[in-house]
Length: 186
Image (cartoon, rainbow, N blue to C red):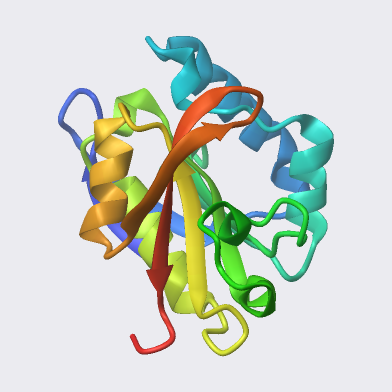
């Protein structure tokens, strides 16, 4: 367990949640939460789905940071993931960072919150906790992508100090803002 939070559920009841590290044994919970959230999205372009094998790779790579937020029933209600990108899929290339800086870029790869628990700043808590755990000497630059019309997620990143660097098509034609934050000095 990394952190304990008191939040409200859809019925406005106070719920105790814990943020802890996700492991490979959480794969089905992660996949099921993604499926449930994406199925409920009005605009499916807001979220680019990760497939099972990619999730497995993320969860088993020790360089990645994968956090889950669990309710009192041990149900996964949110997750956030940090990955070390390859040079080929590095968001730093999208924002024209110099090639020698690309190995210093880390990605906030995926954050998702169950609709019944939105409005509790869980995405913000997860990203901030990930930032606290990152080796800032190894990854002083963080990047993420957000659909430009996904105001809630974009607002979260901006509140955390990320800056929109470019809007472009990614993931086979989906519009995305690439956001960046330097954490070396924080």
